[in-house]
Image 1 (cartoon, rainbow, N blue to C red):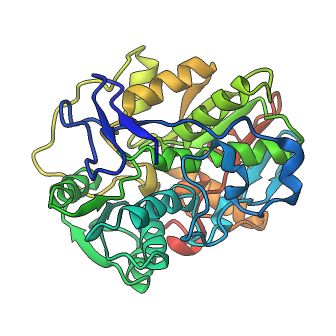
Image 2: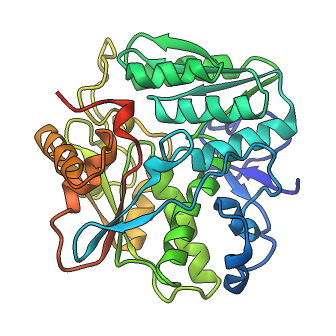
Length: 369
C-alpha cells in the first residue's frame, strides 16, 4: 500500500497504514497521494466487472473483498437537456456507497479494533453496511432528528447507533472525540480522502455512458462536498489522460436555509465567512438534511474547485424542494429531499446539457411535509 496522506494546508504527511485520521498539525482533512496503475484503457472496459471497480487503474485500492456490486447506475434523460443519474439504486440506496466501500476496504486491510463514523444518515447507513460486509465492528453517530428509516437501516446492519443532541456539527465533534481512542479507524467521508476517490467514479461512469464525453455542466448537492470534490478529481484526471478536451462546469447546490458555501462563493471569499456562533446547536432547519452542513472542513477546496471549473453556487428554498420531490415522483422517481435539490435548481435549464444526481431513495425520508 504505497499511498500516503498529505495535508494541503501545511504539507504534513502520514502513512495510510496508520490510523491518523487528520493532520496532527492543523487538524484539517487529508488529501491522498498515490500512483495510478496507468491511464484508463477505454477499450478494455466492456469486458470488465459491472461495478465501479472496473476503473481499477485510477483507484487507490483494487481487488476488494467488501464490494456489494456498487456503481454503474443508470443515466436517464428527464428533458431535452437535463439527465439524471440514478444513484439511489445503489446497494444502500444512496451515492455514499461509492466512498463507503473504499473506507471499509481500507479498514478491513488495516484491521482496527473498531470503526467509527458520523453522518446525517446516508453515509452512516453505507458505512454500516460495508462494515457488516467486512465483519468490522462499527459505531455510527447521527444527529437527533435523523430520519427514522435511516437509523433503522444502520441498526439493521448491526452497527451501534449513537444519537447526538443538537445538529450535524455536534455529531461530528462527538465522533471525532471517539475517533481518538486507540485502535479506532475513523471512517469519515469528510476527512478521509479515500472516500473522494470512491465518489469520483460517478463522473467516470458519466464519461463512459456518454460515449467518452461529459455534459456541459455537472450539478451536485453540496454539504460536505464529497461528491463535488470527487467530480473535480475525476474531471482533472480525465483531462490529464487526454480522454476529454475540456472540463465541465461544476454547479453546486445548497439549501437556502443552510448555505454557508454559497454565501462565501458569492462574496468572493476563499473560505467560509465568519458567522456568529450559536450557544446551543439546533437540529437542521432544512428538509435537505444531507447537505445541512454549517462548517464543512473542506470548504476552501470546494470553493476553489467550483471556481476553477467555471461553475457557480445555486440555492433552493424549502418550497422548491417540496415541489421538486413531487415533480420527480410524478415522473416515476421517488427521491429523498436532499436528492431533489439539483433538480429544483436546474431542472428548467434548456441552454446547456446538465446531469443531476438522484442520490438518495425517497424511502429513506418519505415525502416532505
